[in-house]
Amino acid sequence: MRRNDSAHDSAHDLAHDPSKPGSSVTRGVMALAFITCCGVNISPVALAAPAAMPKARPAATSKPSSRKTNATVPANVSGNVTTMFARASQLFDAGKYPEALVAFDKILRKYPAYDPNKKMLARTLFKLDRMPEAWTFFSKIPPATLEPDAAYEFGVTAFNARQYEAALFALKRVPDGHTLHDLAGYYGGLAALKLKLFEESETLLEQAQVLPDRLARSRALYLKHVQQLRTLQEKSELAKEREAEIARIKGTAGGPGLSGGEKTQIVAAATPQPGSQPTGSQQAPSGTPAQATPYEHKGFQGINKSMAFKGERRTQLSDNHGLADSTTTVNIGSFKFQQGPLIPFGAPVESKSGSRRNAFGLQILFGGEDRNVTGKERRMVIIEDEQDIVRLQQTDPIHKHKLFAYAGAEPWLEFAAGDNWWIQTGVNGYFEYPEFKRLGRSGTVKGFAGFGTRRSSTSWQLVGSAGAFLDTDNNTTIETKDATLRASWEFNPSTSLAMEGVIKDFLYKDQSLDGPDQALSLGGTLSYNFGAGISTNLFGAYERQKNAYFYGMPTYDALSADGDVMTGELSLIAKPATWISLGVTQTISKTTWSLHREEARDTFERNVPDYLSLFKGSVTINFPF
Picture (cartoon, rainbow, N blue to C red):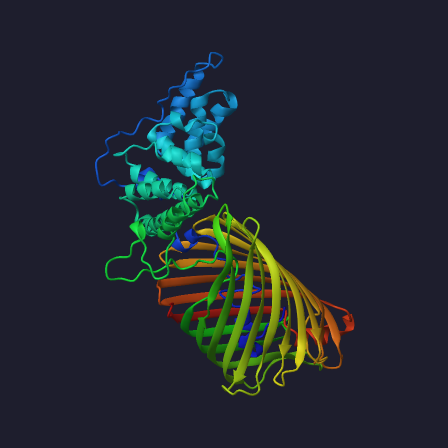
């Protein structure tokens, strides 16, 4: 995949903006669950270690010795096992966990029926942050038999294994006054949240008062969110009760029959009238108008509402097989505004994840950009004489300045179908206006359709699209067709993975244009949130280009070549406040070319890059609304 920023217009950048609905590139992972935005690492490593958790109040329960067990030694086990177990436990109590692991493992191989050893082996693996292995042993132990320390470790390990019911049971066994009581409340609250036990989640999160700074910040966010969920749940239950009561009165639910006059009066009283105020728990505070809860669409499509000013600087190196290279620096200043309506329609569709509705949306985008490109090109020149001399020839510096406005719109429809399934369709249009002039515009128009499903922390989506690129005379120059399969997984509130496979087909109306006729790409993005507004994305992709034509090649006309492109990208994003974000991104791309005419290789390699390094830094002032 050949990319040159000096020729890279912003239509390509914005059409592949990961924040834009319907984008074909998953540079940022889909926003799946509300927990993701909290940005907290729930991994119990180090933070969950009891020694690192100072307690503000004295412990009422002393830490029991790891050697204390209620199990009896089987008759067929030699008395030597108790001596071995005591020595291994001493290593555990001294914090020498690698040595203790070796000792407990030796006992396991020699005396596999000795149950106390299994518990200590699980606890040692927990201390060493080997969670999957620790759960292998913890899962065989009834949590009701564990003392508080081991119960806490059992609970965190079960939470990490997504066994939320077992985690909640074990964490609730850590008594008040114990050193780990607050941490148990924190992780127990998260487990209850996963189980949608919002009232219990709120109680446990309120229990967690003394926490490390990172967990304390995330606890406040979780607690606020759980309280909001409880309010929504209570309103939903109240609405269902009202509907059931109306149905009973009308006789549709098998309720007792009432006279016509009584029925009319009661139904009128139970049904909210236009302009009436809510009653009971829904009554608005005195002096404030009642407001309905805003509709929250749970599908794949959505509307972004934001305004931003952005400054970006890019440095790009393109290398032509070591024979030539070019270096460019791009300074970009831009303004971007996104807004639009989202209108639900149709009857609500009930599913296990709650009520869902069809929706119509219209995403509107406009803005402007000032792009200034400077750079230079160097080429290796060999003078053939009695002694070959290699010289470095440098061309005049590159300088391009581009100022333009842009506008785009994406109307879409999304329908709820089946349990957690969505069907979507829409049109995406984007146009540029050089020097802010109405004439001379160019852009793209693309129609798309697809379907997808969301289940817990996993989502799948298949989308097909067809579009065209329009030149300045509004004539079609390139037509595209593509099919995209996306999948994403949320491992915990801090870590997620998104994968994408794309097949593209290109049709060039102008035969002088370079580009692949077909391309197949497979890529993935691993995202991790460190908390405190800092996150990182690691992207990797492979692309196979078929029949890429290069018409501007000296001597050779319409030279054909295929390319295998490997791309890696690492980005770091910091949001110290809601109104500002900072980002740096390093991208490296390497292409292996296969020529259809081997005799043209020397000419080809002098004119076509095989290596690209791009570094981007940006500062964005955000105005969300």
